[in-house]
Length: 219
Image (cartoon, rainbow, N blue to C red):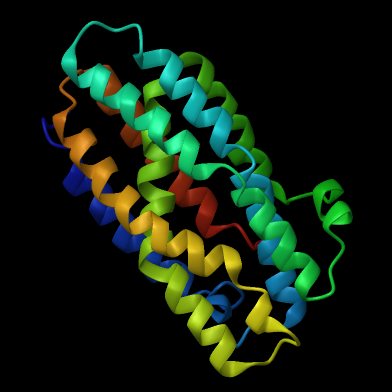
């Protein structure tokens, strides 16, 4: 594997953003023309994958904090800090669901679709077998959020096609703003990684996540 994986991950990110913004069902989230039903589906499915974030980060912390090298120490510190900042983000989604007349408890029970089920299974596998690989989840998803979250929130409010939408974009707007900082932190840490197995795990996770996220709204 090439010594530098960031360029490959950035190319993957650009491809993913291009595809989701052009998708006939996913795209309206970002241009603001989504119907209430589509936005509710998006919020519900996002809730189910966001609920995996804290366990992912804890696995990453546990997998790096006992390593003696400086890079692992920095990774562990990053995971610990990220855990603190990610607390409650799933509740933002439930609040947005409620704001547009959805049932948060029903959303928790709802089948999140095949892409999210696969994402959860892959996440839990990586947490056990290659915990540093969870950086791939964060790198891809937080870069998408930083690039599109605030834009989507602004567009949805501007189009105003969903009743009470101005009170239902907490996750998109707040998470998008936070992820600008996370994006830079994640990139800096990934660039320092020299262990080939860690790189393979991170890139593989990013690739799987990209494919699955592109299919978030499918079925």
